Amino acid sequence: MALPELITATTHLLGVLPLQIPNPDPVQPPGTQGVETILAWLKWIGFAVVAGAIIVGGIGIAVALRRGEAGDALPKILWPMAGAIVIGGGIGMVSALMGG
Image 1 (cartoon, rainbow, N blue to C red):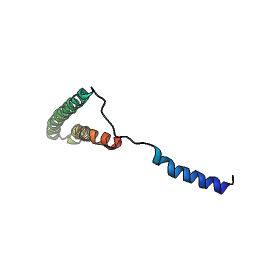
Image 2: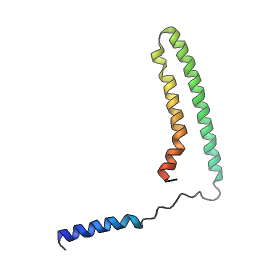
Image 3: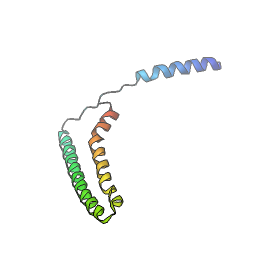
Image 4: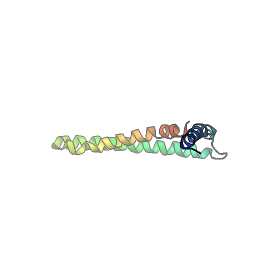
């Protein structure tokens, strides 16, 4: 087989092959409804912890501002906010990756 024929055959195979691979939708197995409840609880606990951390960070900023050290206290509130973004977007990111 000559090189141009090999390239043509390989290109054709690569063009047809992905169409034959199935991509089924994710289906929850029977009897695993409790997993959704656990995920909901974990998300709620995560948001409660983040809210508490933001409040404590705000208090720390107020105290540090009074002392003139507000720059050191700012990350105490920024990191919990980043955590809230990750928690809130986590399900969306996983759903996007799963094609849901």
